[in-house]
Length: 474
Image: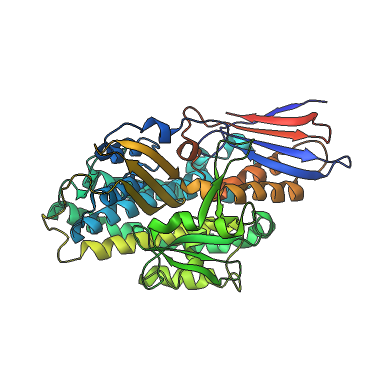
């Protein structure tokens, strides 16, 4: 018998998604799929455009993380121009990228995930949101708003506006940093750092209440991928690719980003518009890997900043090898926010940070360019080819969320097998199926280029494909 459960408010994810849970004849979960149901196709839209338009055009892919696309696209255009970027421009791009990370991680942790922690996974969904938190936990709500505001304010001060700034351009940035802006950022830094530190203290105590979720939220062996610098430390702007296995053993290292096609490939499943990236030497789907904050903290030797390294050491004590539970994406985000703030402060004290030399100029000198950086949700790759006039003839984007597609799908299955009992979706089970997706913080509009609202459709199907229960959200 078909039944419908309507749950409000709108699911706390960004983009369009559907989940189907398949039961066998005994009523047990046999399979589950995470479907991303919308498509817009920026790779085709950009064909025929001049390459120098790409950074500002690609920033329009997403209103949540426009800076990430701006930076990766500009790096691909740098490669097309074959120019050496001024060191100060690299530092300024890095600051902007880290400010993006700070505000995006704050959005994910405080606005989307913390209602589950503060109000309970089984609480009434009508009150499980940031607005209810503002009443029941006002300090936490204010901290989240303030931290995100600080990250966005840095973007606005540097780039001219918070959404889709055009400041990063092929060859560098289009304006130097002023002394006034530098001092404004530094003046607000202590408050931001203190917010993250007290949130980390609270969250580490809170994790003991979620042992069942930690055990079942996409907790399985996988590979982990991300960028590291030449010392094997945390890196978001530049560096080389590294892959480690579930025990923390390095299986690929110092892979120049231009060589990414040697180790990363993409597959398409019939149930989703989200491409699934995988580690090429192991094949599909055995080459499943995870990217993003959890992966980045698993692949490094250290963060490279004092406070973040102290937290990272405790984080790595969660497992003997790599930290496997995707529940710990939340923990990793807080550590990365702390790192981002510390690293921004370091760069702002660089003696040449106010240099006026921030851009190199050139026309197209290469027919192919690749730009790779770390977006909040994982490794982001922009790959372009141009003709003799500098017009885009081909483009491929491996979006951060696409790196996690296989793991998200398997995570939904793991959670469903543990929490879905019988032929009806309970509120607690439904929320946990969604919560494992929220742990990855997918940017579905970004990864498939969707438009519109943010619904999630969950269906429970028997062995014959009959809909036993469903939930429409949004």
